[in-house]
Image (cartoon, rainbow, N blue to C red; front, side, top):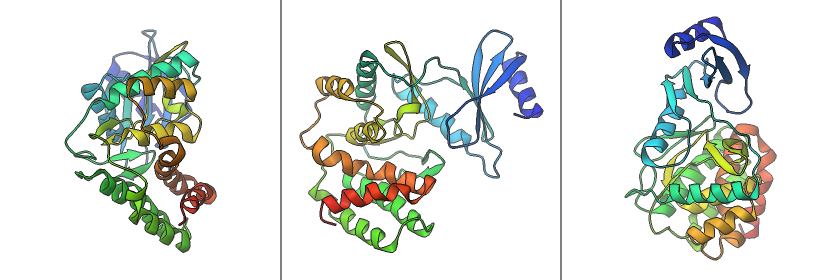
Length: 285
């Protein structure tokens, strides 16, 4: 972190900075823990790119705080180049009781609804633009603004073969054979994987780095399985609160995980194509 940014943070918070410690995580910019002479700490994200976009993350955190009870860091300063947030204690290791607590928190989040799928502004998932054009139909939203949006951009960027691109289009045209709309749109965190959740002891202390929109709760649940964020204790508790329909684990989980896999193809390359290939091949495409 350069001296000018340190000075800006100190001036805004009204405290001297004792040290800045780099933190792991985040696809946008640099992340630091900033220790202050008050004895408290904040998290600073710095985006020095030509087109900084940190305000989107700050706006998403504020939206979650204003529209749900999900524990997220308080935003202290929100500019395109600099985002200051409350520092939340904890790490990304989850005991069985912590998993159950996570289920309770996400079930409560998903109880917040809207009249349409999407959001009235676009967000980001990692470093990628995430379109949230509002739709009254879940299948239309998931097909056009999640699967095909990422599929077409992956092809344009040269990380997806033409044959797989065509097969994904055929599969997307038949999504109504495999998934159904939820009773209502649900507010989603949108990026619940291991390092975006913090716990201390048996309690969840925070969710960070969101990618919010209103969608089907099942896409959120599926995402937690892709990299092993949560397991049986989480799903048993979630099911007690909000029953998961039959066929989710057998069929729909894998289909919903096409979206984060496509995100990873664009962010990290062709190594994630095999999971996409396996999914659509299993269904005959």
